[in-house]
Image 1 (cartoon, rainbow, N blue to C red):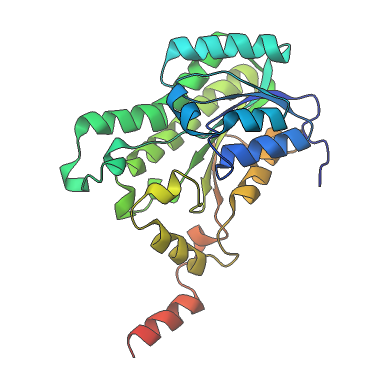
Image 2: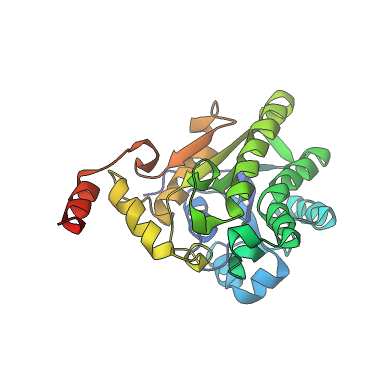
Length: 273
């Protein structure tokens, strides 16, 4: 149900690939709530995905940009402000990629060249997105910037590999830049630590089905869906959360606060006869 929570607000959504991606679902919800935005993704991702379909559904435009390139980000912001008719109120950073994970590299045999690429794409790009936005003075006061994270930033999930370090860096950047942006423009910066979600990127991780099922058993409310995450992002873009900043917000059905559940105890009992 739409409540016009984002009526009159303008923004940029990074990372929509296909209908399974959280950025895609968020774009649809933002559109429902009256927000206008431009969509962006790296040129290679745009060739693989269906972003033009989403743009049509949301009466939006697509501007290709590599979020690791300062030049591309400057071009993106300048074109976005022309298309949208002024400064922007929200940004979603839904970007993550590990060449080490994609190539199946063991954690004790990582390519450090790949590791640096993981950090650049999945974490440093968030700093670049905000640094260029600040330098170009593209954000309106009381704007909201959100990035997607995962609990592997705090806990060990072996198959998540160097993405765990990238997410830890991402969350740290949100705190440091959140402080800076709050002081200068009252812009808030938060990360959402989302349940395992069946996106194209998520399902590419080895053993994903197992830890999706494990998280489902360990979460009193069950895993939070991509659609539910989109709803949460809308709330963070709205004026209802103006005093929330520099937080890593757990959106995981209670997983992060649960030690063990009856369901898991029962499964272990059956395994042990």
